[in-house]
Image (cartoon, rainbow, N blue to C red; front, side, top):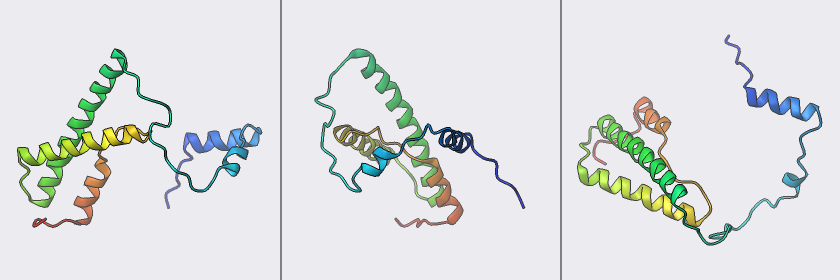
Length: 127
């Protein structure tokens, strides 16, 4: 039987709690459900350095997404053409823009999900 190692975050949380540094009163007082308001933090401001940084981030996200689209095509036996890639990247762009309006981070693909498709064979070539 393999013993799992305690993660550093788990050890840190237990240590902080034992030293009385963890306060959960705000968590207990928080509502169970809430309404997400668009642009909660105010209207967007445009500055060159953050724009350039986000452009680099989005290029990385797009390259990652392209790899996953192609991997899924190979796993499912479906040829992925340029139109499919364009639609996938467009969907990521729209999702990121909508996410920004609703106060969240850019969306990205998760390679774990691609791996699960291959491992579980949960795919159809006719889709």
